[in-house]
Structure formats: C-alpha cells, structure tokens
Image (cartoon, rainbow, N blue to C red; front, side):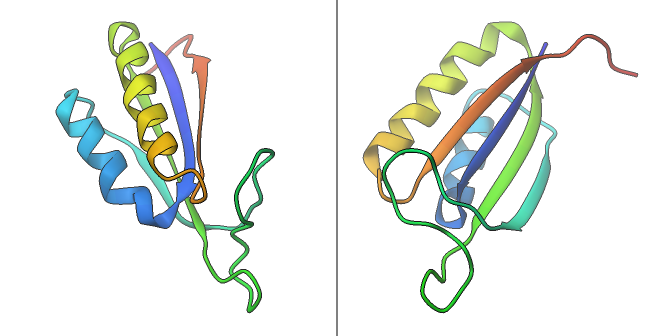
Length: 97
C-alpha cells in the first residue's frame, strides 16, 4: 500500500474526488485551507489580499496496483490547469491497524 498526499488549488477538490471515485479509491483525510507556494510555475496561494486563493490537501492510502493510474490521472489534471497547481507525493505504508 502507498500513502498518496496531494496538495492542490481548492478549485481542484471535486476533480480529485472524481478521480478517486473512478478508480475505486475510498477513504481520505482532507485539509481544506492551506497556504503555500509551489516550487515550479504558478501563483502563490496564500489567502492574502495580494494572493487570495488557497490550497487544499488530501491524504489517502491506495493499493499498489492503483497508484500508477491515480498518478497519471492527477498529472493530466495538473497539465490541464497549470497555473492552479497540483502536486502529488507517494510514500510506502509499512503497516495499518
């Protein structure tokens, strides 16, 4: 199993959930309002007067056989809206209870 952490513009939230549903990925933890600035292109999302947008983040645990397709779909979403920003990080999960 893998832990998949996705940080993204809040505008992507419903799209991320739709991708998860299409792949049968259930269960997640969601942080609704995060501030941040990406390391690539795009605008900062700081929730300030100058940069009013915010990011959200989602953490989900995914079966190994679904991770590649999940990453592919999320990457396509990011490419479709490059200024909004979406980054995905994957870690190994050693145990769950």
